[in-house]
Image 1 (cartoon, rainbow, N blue to C red):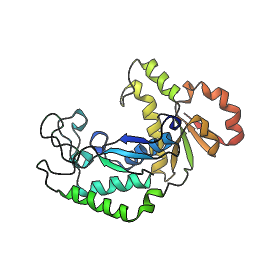
Image 2: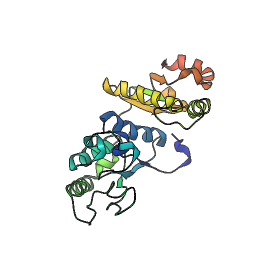
Image 3: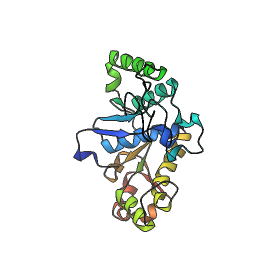
Amino acid sequence: MAHGGGVDSYGYTWVASRHGNDPWMQFQAVDLVRGAARGKPFWHAEATGGPLWMQPQVVNRPLEDGRSSEEKDVRVWSLVDMAAGATGILFTRWRPLLDGPLFGAFGPMGMDGSVTPQAEMAGQLARWTNSHTDLWKSRPVKGDVGIVFVQESEDFNAVQSGGASRAGTAAGAYTQSVQGAYQAFFDSNIQADFVSIDDIGEYPLIYLPIRSILEIHRRQAPRLCREGRQVGE
């Protein structure tokens, strides 16, 4: 989660075929980028409109878990992008690759360039949003709680564990902690925002993942006690 002060706009990659199709996962992907952008525009720069094959992320997962995109998936994923504040949606490619390990993947069009139901849906959404331009100006309401993302905590977790922060590994514990907190709030109908340590004063309640490794917390403790409540693991 980079800091929004260094860029003019953000673009992000998120495809359910690699991560899963649970509703909370789709929203947290967009919410995380919105939190990093800190009010600046951001796009879903690599959305998916087609299936994914021959990749390690799809093994032992059912097709409906985001692996095989249908037109209803394109509709829902796009509406999630809009609801969470994205100001543009682009597909990874319009037509899938014809060979290689990513053959047939991601694109809403057929491999022969034909129009598929997924492409039809993408076109309907584009026409609808372009005829109602105020949709791109709307922004989500402020969350009820801020999940504090601290880069130093993630770095420390990776160094301590001796590897990159991948889910399912000790080095991925920080990511799993952050996502687990988000899922718990999401499933309880509580809107959570991802926030920087500099923005904690804007929320009546903040959540600190893996607080025990957060050195900066010691310097911020008086401020936290003065401005709201803090929950930490």
